[in-house]
Image (cartoon, rainbow, N blue to C red; front, side, top):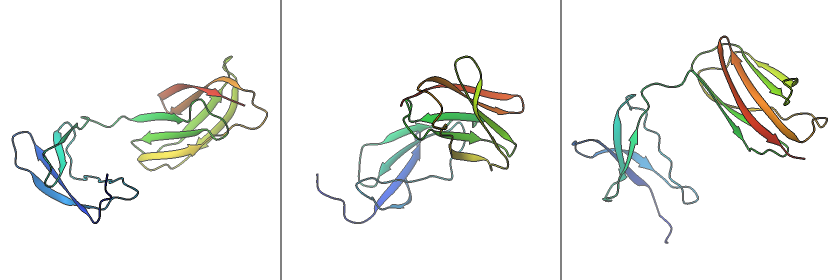
Length: 151
């Protein structure tokens, strides 16, 4: 496949509507990224590159989750990274628990702005390989995810 030289024009439509140019994007290392800030929760949009007949349709969720947690990598060897999605500023407690429910590591985060944040909660070298749980708490909101730690 030949390399793309220059920028690409991204277009958007809603069901039954006309295609409209949104903006230009220049691929980096063969990947083009584009963020559409003018979306409406609950709406469905089609996207394509100008001149193309192939389109990708996206259903925008009706509302953002109040709190979300994703773990990477899992299983983890070394760094344990958490992607936290928060909808408001409030103290958040992250606890790494062993299978007996004992806290192995605890971290409190204050003042995270709404959005997605990546947090490193790599356990100390004294934590043994095995199955653990990551608990995220903010007031009455709580999420727990399983993680496997490797040597």
